[in-house]
Length: 426
Image (cartoon, rainbow, N blue to C red; front, side):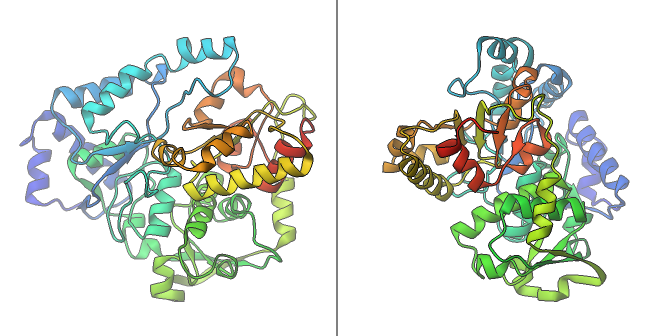
């Protein structure tokens, strides 16, 4: 790897021992992936994946404190993934005891560290930092130092920014140094597609299900997707962006996708078209039967597969304003059709704090509350990490949450039926 004089000076200790170690870490990371150089991080803000004061993460807290003590502070302010706790989300006495005493007992002190390191503000806890209300929306061509997989794939694909799928802690390292290694999705060649995915469905495919199918097929490769523009249109509307948010999260969690191209829709696909496709690209055809096959093969890991659901999570990644409004209307209609007053299963909708604040200014907030749905900014995944919560029969329409926890996946239509009409049937 060739370093500039400025980069070499930092590595040699011109800005202190701690920052030299940060630079050394980045150089070793780049060497591992055969990066040719370090390039400047150009985004206004960073985003960190480690938002949770999990007791077992003591080495992370010690590292953060060393950075703070040495004045090795982030070059950028940053947003961070969602908080792991919310007293409004249902939990019994034992579950709360585990949360408080054995899992997230250091949450408050860790958040103080995040503030000292450069946290944007109190509302900056979300996995969907790129939503307008949050304010961390990079521009096309911006070089990022992010690690949250669902945010990375959205930034790369929908916004046209450039970021590799970094690990946690590497995100803050890149931000402190102001540089990241140049390889993979930061390069023009690394952004070309080695898969062509043909969407031949008879109706608009479920975002989370389609993303899951593609992720499990292409793994870490870049897919060029044909036919989806027939359902989403050729403009990145609020509706299309919400769809791609959930779609991308599923490709990233069910596989390891960091970038996808949608023909006639996403920025690079509109600019470069099929020139983005590599020679001899593999082909994957997705029709109705293929999506049915994928969903039918999801494992059910509840102790009792026929158990009555005790909790439902909607919003992983966090819901956008449009999704909140759409879900409110759908729940109201479902309850009206069934003659029920409130949802039949305890249900939590999750959204960024900043979106929640704006949503609560609208008429929809009172309407949603009337249905019995709980509105929260919690991380459902962190909630499900509690071993007592993991034993619960929890349902979701998030393929990311299904992949990382014991929760059971259903399509949005199926979830809506269960919470408004179907009630206690698994």
